[in-house]
Structure formats: structure tokens, C-alpha cells
Image (tube, rainbow over all chains, first blue to last red; front, side):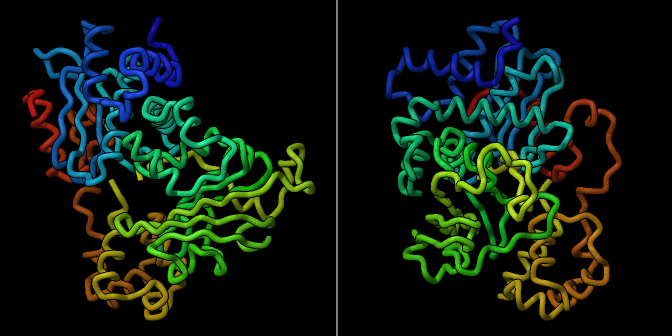
Length: 303
Length: 107
């Protein structure tokens, strides 16, 4: 059955179709048109017949079954959200629910930012799959790697250019790069001096470099970090090299950007190659890093 | 739905131009506790601390805790049709219901 395809598989298949049709000129992906056209062609008996925005406070988006007498499915989203990138991601997320989950949830799915953030909740897995689909569809890995090498230590300027190209938020673009980065790096999002959440690249995670924020008391930003000293930033941006024990037990390069609009501070930490005292074989050891555990990104994809 | 209590505290604090440090000092709480209330929606916050926070922010503890959207008998039809439906503000719920009833794909 086609519907048992994985979220990534769906995204790759759709990417191939778009690439054949529009070549390199296909970004940002027009999710609204794609969802309707594709579902009408492939599932003519059960297509997406409505994509509708509204001023819907407290709501992200949802996939709804058409009422009796009408055919197919509808995507309803909050069009009052000021960030177009966030809306684009939400539309792709709901399209993912349609492709992957509509048989499992015949009455539809409704997503709040909080649902998307709660990975241990009942719907955590389902929400994660929809996020994976959206990230892969909007930011195909091959194309992204051409913009920013998996081996580089990009600045927020470079990642911001990608966010623009793909029509997503800076946070979503940074998380996507982190997924396929071949280096050790962390993305830390904070507000008012404490860490909201953090995510490590796979290599950083395997070598014990991560910041745990779930089920622990709030983690304060290190006092010597740029993120904790916004007065040192130039137009809200800055880059600094730190010795060991500023952020982590090892030296790092910190890139920080303050978003006044969202009242959040974004920080990228570029680390060196794995320190010899911590090889990939002993990452089960307890030490101070273990205050930190990588959580899946939640609403982080939207921010 | 979002962290209603946290959003209220944060908005009132910023309105009064208080830093986290200052509000913590005025209420005998730690800075990290106030931050947690604002950002992490901790279960069962201390009533004593909340009442001190309410006092400094010039509101009642009832105002801080009153969340019209949270305590609501689950409507059977809603529960069947929408997941987590009852956590949405009433107004948003109504608007979504209208959109699904009309099912109009025009802009």
C-alpha cells in the first residue's frame, strides 16, 4: 500500500516531481498548490479540497475531514501568524499528516504549537513524523548542502539566506543544517538569560556535547557567553571564540543573534573535533554533560 | 494552548518594566523560578509565591490563575471530531467550526 511510505520517502518522491518540473527554480515550495494538485491526481477519491487560513489565536494548523456531503480533506491554518516561514512550515506539516496519517486518524488532526513541542505525549511520534516530512520537503538535503556545506561552520547570515530561499524560519533552517552537519555543533535558543531548548548535531550528540533542558531546573546562560551579554553585540549579532568551560568543557566558537521580534536569542556553538578524552565508545558515561539530553525539536521547527 | 499563566506574568512584568531579577527580589523567589513560571508551565506552582507575584504585579491571584479555556466540560461531539479541541480559545473554536461547516476553498 502506498500509504505506508515513510515521511522522508514521501518528501523525496515529491521533491523528484518538483525538480523534474521546475528544476532549480522550485523554491520556496508552494505547499498550498502542491497539496491540492498532488492529492487530486494521486488520490482522486480522497483529495485535499480546501486550504483555508483564518485569524485563529492559539492555533497552528489542522487537518480536517470534510463534513457529510463534501469530499476529501481540508487544511485550516492560522494566517494571523506574522512569520510567512512559520505558516509555510505548518502547511507542509499538515500535508504530511494527510499523506502519512489520514488512515490512522480518520477524523483528522489538530496541532497546537504545544503539541508539536511535546514529544513524549500521545501524539509525539505522529507530530515528529509530520515535522520530518515538512523539513525534508521544504529544505531538500541535496539542495541545502549546495548552499551550505555539511563540513562548514556557517554563520546566521548564511543560514538566514537559506531560510529565505526555502521560505522557512531561521530556526527551521538551522535545525535542518544541524541534521546533516558532519561537524560537532549545537543550536541553543534562550530567552531572558535561560535556555529554552537546545539541539546537537548527530556527531556532537554522540560525543557528549549537549544541553539538557527537559525535567531539570532552568539552565542559565554562561555569564561569559555573548548570549548573556547582549551589550557586546553589534546590531544584535556577534561571534566570539571561547576557551574551555565557558559553554562546555571544550573551547568553542559562539555565533549569537538576538531576535527582538520573537524575544529570543539564537546561538550556534561550533566545536572542534571530538576531544580525545571522550571517544564515541564511552558516551554512556555520566559526567556534567549528562545534565543535558538531546530532545527532539518541537515547536522549534516553527520558531 | 500556550502557557496562559506564564504569558500573563511575563506581559505584566514587562508592562511594569521589571526585570526577572527585580521581580524575584520583590517576591522572595529565585530568578530561575520566575523564569520557569513564565516559560515552562511547571505543574502546581506554589500558591504562596504566586500570591506575592500577583501583589507585585498589581493583580489578584484569581486573575493570574483564571483560565477560561482550561476548565471546560468536554463536549461529546467536539471530542469525537477534534483532538485537544477544548484547549483552544472559544473564539478560535467557533471560527474553525464555521470554516469546516462552509468548506469554501475561495480566498
